[in-house]
Amino acid sequence: MASISTPLSFLSTTANVSAATSSSFTLFPLQPKRHRYPKSKRHISKVSCNNGGDDNVISKGNRRDVLIGLGGLGAAASFTYNPFAVANPVVTDQNSCGRPNLPAGAKPIPCCPPKATNINDFVFPSNQPLRVRKPAHLVTGDELAKYKEAIRLMRALPDDDPRSFTQQANIHCAYCHDSYALDSTLPPQVKVHFNWLFAPFHRWYLYFYERILGSLINDPTFALPFWNWDHPDGMDIPAIFIDRRSSLFDAKRNANHQPPVLVDLDWNRRGVDTSGEVDKNYAKVYKCIADVKGPACFFGSSFQAGGGVSSAAGSLETLHNTCHSWTGDPTDPNGEDMGSFYSSGRDPIFYCHHSNVDRLWTIWKEKFGGVDLSDKDYLKSSFLFYDENKNLVRVRSEQCLDQSKLGYKYMDVPILWKNAKPKPATNKAQRAALAPTPLNPPNLPLVLNSITSFAVKRQFKSRRKEEKAEREESLVFDVAFDKSKDVKFDVLVFWKGDPMQATPKDREFAGSFVNVSHAPNAKDTTVKYIIGITDLLDDLEADDEDNVEVTLVPQYGVVPVTINNAYVSYDECSFKK
Ligand code: C2O
Figure 1 (cartoon, rainbow, N blue to C red):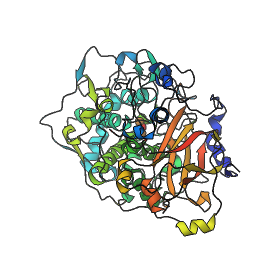
Figure 2 (tube, rainbow, N blue to C red):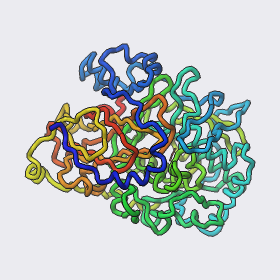
Figure 3 (cartoon, helix red, strand yellow):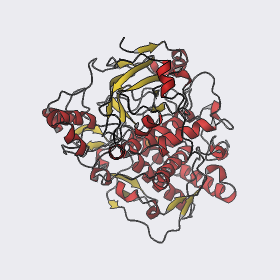
């Protein structure tokens, strides 16, 4: 027996969700073999990174394997995660902007901003009043009137004005649907999802959006509200977005998810939608923010020009994905507006959703000991935005790390999930009694069309405390799927009950892989899902186990989703410098 498979009860409901579109594209242009590189140094060259035909993914995991092959694991412990540095920071080149790579069914749109003859380097504003971003559910009266007026004026600008509503929405389309070349000679495109650009790009995006809105109403104190979905009072769509006559309204939203229905941060699209559950949402936010230590597990994988495509979303991004899909209109083939990245910027709630995501980044640093990345290629990565005076500005990621320098802060709101650490469903003794037979390794590549359990070998067990702090143990999956389709599967570890009953409130619920429709597969067909498990294994009294027992629970998505590899790593979460 290679693995345990349980027949799938979710398929029939999933089929309803995806039936509208699943017939119109080719499912899996992947070779059936394991998606890994032979252990030979020549495969790490720049050429093979970017000239690899249909298989161009060289990620740090692959590099690490190579290094182990060359020098043993001792060497692997100390290197930076991109040891053969042919890479450079991602630099947006306005001249490289081309047609976006849109999913089937999307109306073709040109996403590129107008070209500028001059690009200014960003300078920090001086003598600016502090802008205080408030929870959207607390925005009323004058503040609300100003916000609505600012968006109304933005909507009234002609489409070719870089500050216009359309152009602002298209920024997201261009950066998320492969419009910018990473390097004028290389095929991979600039992407701001599934990698470490996610946090800084979106921070900058909101920053200029907020300044533009403020200037339209002549109010330098104007601050973008945040959708406080981690607080019970903010867990449904804020009332200010619901009024049909308001400039904040967007018609393309899920009709079943109107207030007072609470957002379900673990939304599985099963059966009739019910309201989200406050405690489950707390557990989910706790898991993705408070519980995450390794910077790569929080921010996502490295992403560099010339560095090949290494793709893994951090927990901040993964957490935020569900809200996108939950808000978008399921009767649209791509879940417009919020449910697809090319269209999500057309819903004003998008910016408030991201304001909360940005706030959680700050909270992670201020309250949970999170530390920003220090890699040069991260710090120097740069983006282009038009400011409120229609000047094109080049910004670098390193310039946005100190929020106070950008002149805004978040209103203090109680963080009610800060102690919502999930509890184990079973302890060690109960587990041993429940399932005495050990699991086998996964049968790779594994087509994930049913609940599947297997064992993943660990290299070390019962490490010393310092070692654990130094190198976060993580569970890594190489996942191949169509990126223009929504996908979710859950990862349970040492779970002994009915897998369909596990929820984020269980400690064994290690995480969920979530994709929001974006650019269809071009060159990169595989991404990684990395989950830090050091504390998790301690909490489950499982740190002395030889294997991690894993159960994958597919929740929705166009099949097949294929797991090309599953392994335990001690470097993927950490970006050791
Ligand atoms: Cu660029 Cu919420 O996505």
